[in-house]
Each structure stands twice: as structure tokens, then as C-alpha cells.
Amino acid sequence: MSDVMNKEQRSNNMKAIKSVSKLEQRVTKALWNKGFRFRKNSKLFGRPDISISKYKIVIFIDSCFWHVCPQHSNMPKNNEEFWRKKLTRNMARDEEVNEYYLKRDWNVLRIWEHEIKKDFEGTIDKIEQFIINSKKHYT
Image (cartoon, rainbow, N blue to C red):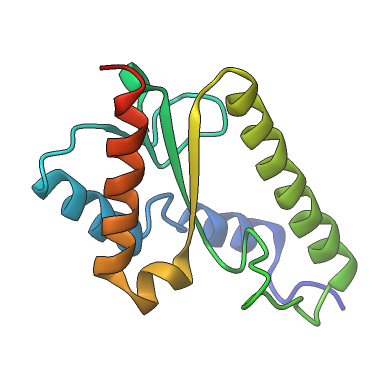
């Protein structure tokens, strides 16, 4: 099935998509209020959502759709071949990013969007413990 938008309309539509979600803003605000200092969307490899270079910490908040959550992901019916390639490449890129940091002894945490939606405080506690435990190696 062909796209219902012309190339210019599709381009404008894609440009309007924000790189930082409201969910991500809630998470970073909660962590900041707990006293954690970090960089958001730093220009490190893979563009981590949260990074603390001093302690070699990177945290990614993964959308269930774009990162193919095993519980909630679904393949769009329109233009299925395109989406299969796109989402498969996203998963492969996530693995490449994980391997990049792990080979360099960084601490990597990936959080699914559904974890945040289901138990916001519990997820914040999980991230907090991850940061605290990761910092122990450097203090």
C-alpha cells in the first residue's frame, strides 16, 4: 500500500516528532529532584537518554513500538516490509550500542516505556539503585 501523504507532508510529519518524550521528561525530572546530576541525550554513541560519564553510566528509555518490546510490540499492517526492516534494524542497533558500552566497561540500563507507565515510582527506584551501585565502582 502506498503512503497516503506525499513526500513533503511525510517529511514535515516526521520532523514534528519530538526526540524527548513526556515520559522521559517525567523520569529525568524525578531523578533530578532526587539529587542525581546527569546529561540528557548527550552526543555519546547511541545517544543515551541519560548519561553520567564520570561513572560510566548510560540509561536508555526504550519505546515499546520503536524498540520492539517483547510484550507490547506489534507490526504495522501497512507497508509491512518497510516496518519489518526498520524495526529489525532498530533492535540490531540497540544490541550494537549495548556491546559498544559493555566492551568499554560502562554500565548500561535499558528501561521499557511500559515499565514506567505501570510502576513509575518502582522504575525510578530501579534506576536510582542502578546509579548508586554503578557509582560504587568509582568511589
